[in-house]
Length: 428
Ligand code: ATP
Ligand code: MG
Image (cartoon, rainbow, N blue to C red):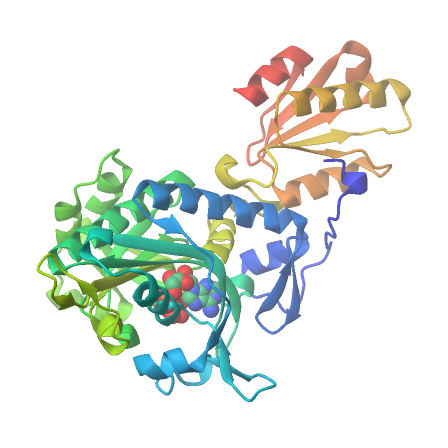
């Protein structure tokens, strides 16, 4: 991508409205713009990261047996009246009336819609287990939207819903999802602690929250340090993980904590995922029944599984930044390489930089090429701010000698290397 043709409205100054670093940097790096409180446009750079996070979630969740669908964002109130949640949900629900006076709403979650799909299309135990998910926008009219996309009103969520014949099968599915979540966060390079959680309004009794560790997180966590080793292993011992102690501030009682001080870690966390098993709550209320092996009508056991995809983007920045800007890990970086042509007016430099750019494209390396006629200082500052993992700099002297300067964002190590060596490093 040529920066001269891209849309990257970076800001030099810190926006006054942004209190946390991820919000500041997402605005400054031209990733998002606020439309109204808690509602954002994702600009090209931000959208690339959002899609990468979504794709990793998608791949891992599908490996665990989930199947993607896409449900509407606008839902009928009548479905929520059937489940009994329409009145309970309160002011967080954005209620809408259409031209025919039908009560509609912008979905804060989709248990009702997916249960409706299920009851109209699934008739037999032979079709179970079934695990459907989507990655789509949600709306919750949060009383205090804040910290940018971390707590937005409109946000992007992976929400999955499982249907099983009975409790035993449903619990198996639940822990399959639990493991898939651990794999997702590991692949993303984020340490996410699973905490036994309260089911809240959604009901039921099996539930875990996944909290990414970051100094600026909204929750205070206490957990057994054994999590750290166990989460780094290639396979997960779910039974042992479940026995480890982890609690949020309100639930932690230092006097009665089962873990002694030397093994107890305290850290700030950001809730990035939440899974629930809630039994037949919705299948009963909405009469979504199937025939079991004996031809008897049975209400399936359900679970739901959320990941705040847009919040994860912010969580990354909270975890990976320095004073100059973002430091993207390669898995989700909007581009892998930022190529800077220091002197566009120098013909040798421009021919050399253009040719290196073409080579990167040919090797399928995602590259953002700063080909604009601008000061070196501004170009360096922009690259540091947007945080691409590799920076490659072409200047008149290097171009004459056929060498490039290559730098890993977040370190001070710079190397002067040949074109071939640079390509080797960037395609490794
Ligand atoms: P929170 O406690 O942070 O308000 P929640 O428990 O209400 O979240 P869930 O219903 O568990 O949220 O939704 C699943 C996931 O969606 C959460 O774990 C979180 O990552 C994300 N999420 C929820 N609300 C928001 C929001 N307002 N903005 C961005 N992401 C959100
Ligand atoms: Mg939650």
